[in-house]
Image (cartoon, rainbow, N blue to C red; front, side, top):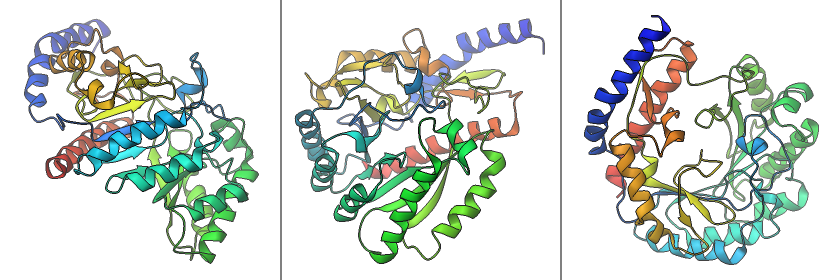
Length: 357
């Protein structure tokens, strides 16, 4: 198919196919009218690494810590709806390394104390997990922890986790594993994570073999392989891969506008964890409650745009695999599988939401 013909067909799909299908699919959208089901809290936007697959590395925005008082106020509000089984997940991470926040332990314990029903998620790059941090983790009631390692040697790690030291991170994780063997019932369930991309796929077996040996006989520690995503087209480094393969597509609604909010360290609030540059802002948590933003005019406007497949105000969504569904895919099999995976994930969230509310 030549490019001109494909361009004309895509314009027809955008004008005559995506809008009516979007309105139909909107009726079956995973949604909560009263309060969001997923809340992301960027405890800090400061990070000690410059990972090339993270949009923070290239971001011009000002970085800082979320004030403890604002964090506690937000958790108090979330707890009210958590008691009513309306919250699925509270994530204490966005684009920073949480252990760099001077009050991270107090924030984590406050969350665990207040949030009793929702899943609490915390991610770390492992660089700060030295003995004092590990001690606090094993004193805590945190349910789970994801540790991103990615590399299998200095060379691969230096590319993916620029600024870190592979041998130090491995040693930190080994100390955590050894502590788990001694205290199997204490501390969070841990996941050693690798991001699967075109670059890392070749050494996945090596990664698994190494860490399976390390965690052998250690309870509540698992391996986690997470598919790479390019943050809605914001990461274009071809050493990884590009999800958005050439092809004809339609745009269907994404659950995030009706189910999720993400609050950055300065209070600016979006509806998507991929919105690193805050293009889809619905308010500011310094001045507003989550409920007020969830019921505010900005979010209503964005929802109406997505419902009608009008992406002038949602340019980030227009290039995102959560919204873009390919009809014809000229890319790799892995790229196509990711589109199928996104559709499956959306369906699972919808079904879970039906029973969850």
